[in-house]
Length: 198
Image 1 (spheres, rainbow, N blue to C red):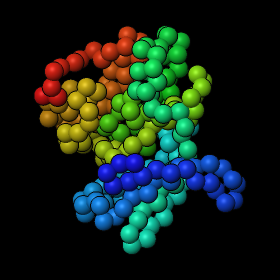
Image 2 (image 1 turned 180 degrees about the vertical axis):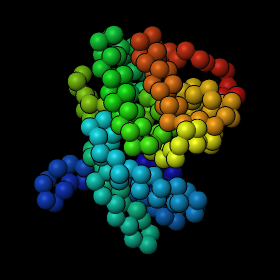
Image 3 (image 1 turned 60 degrees about the horizontal axis):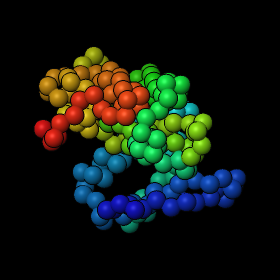
Image 4 (image 1 turned 60 degrees about the vertical axis):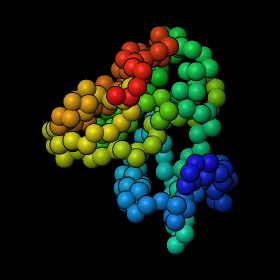
């Protein structure tokens, strides 16, 4: 549960498959948040890749959005990393390869995720061979050309330098974030740390 949404398990009536149902109260979000949500849903509906969370459907009524996605029951990469402190090189390579597959696919679609971090990498199970899926496309945006992006966004520990320097940037900003995550996976802490976000 969050401040304006709750996620429940559901089941497909056709196949019996377990799914996740994110229920969002439309009265609890501001108009600009609703616009951003619609943008995220439109973008996510176009993405189909084994390492990107699949949105199956969206239903809405005057009070509520119901966002149906595949169920990913393994938590996020940060939880997994916290539980093990660091990954072996072999396990780390697998995670990084999955991230790069997802980022490369998004880039091929002209999409910059812009908030790549362990919390936005979900696992489909709690097993050691779990599949990594990129999720949370709230900051994602289609790039219209070279250095066409300019919004400062993302998480301070993972964001690319060109974003922090308020320069125009492109979909390659996600590659920096992959590097930060790869470093943290192997050594157990981030390469760039500070006492505050600033």
